[in-house]
Image: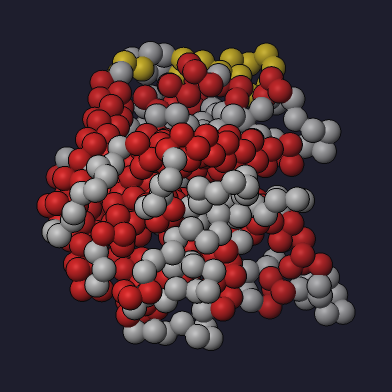
Length: 429
């Protein structure tokens, strides 16, 4: 491949002549801050945080099927696996703030951002559209339009356009209030996107609907709804919008709620349908759909704010203070929404409470890594692998999503095929 593919999940985009997918050398900071800046100009703590997220992604991918407590929550609730996507989106936001801190031409930067966003979307479509899940290719009539990389591409594109055009230039920042004032248009955009999501989610009327599954060409399953603001698997506005706009044949055909006790005798794992299972148990549902992607964009905006702190504050104390306050506020707000207002933590719907808790957790973890690496200087030996994984995040994602990594790990064994690396570390069969 002629281009490196550490796009988006790696660092930001530099306003240079070459159209490159590497996103290298763009989150450079003044060395006077004491930050751990590599010779290539990368913020070391951000690379390590990204590497930790990649490790978490690999762990939950292969251990989730064995340990249900690690796997994605079947519906409401949150598990370790549910933090991976928000962490990557948060990292995208931080990287973009560092990438566009010194813009020479907004039009050129916009053109390159659009180009990279489209390229990442196409990569995601190739990986998750069904091509690798059928040896004969993929039927365009049934291709899955949305996916993890597609969501990241959309979030990156919206956040990058806002970062390029919606920031005050020549504005001096000396406090948290002045920081918000400098980026007030982005704050307004964040609030607007959140209001749109909540209004559509709780305000749209969801009518009755029906579907067919691929294994049953004649049987039609009917789902009774006729409600507004429902947060269950069958009658939520997120699923309705996906069915209406994307088309039910273009959605993810193995819905996460198939592991609920109503839909699986082996719950919280996948299994046969129990007697009298609800009609919606086998209905397609895309966890990376259109409406839920609005909250993903908000997560990216929050990452932008953390990156703005790095750009505008030059000492560790102020940076850490400006990070801990919003992190604490976000987690607290998410918990209040869950327990006081019934807005459940839900990854499939990317609920407002889920966005708050996971973005706040990302802020806490990034702050902790920053303190360890950039303040205390613990970055010489134990971070080498994490740095490499952080710089090659998308490459690793491709290996994992296409099960290439699994083939590699199971391909080396001692005497018998079952004595492979996965069995050695306790997650093999």
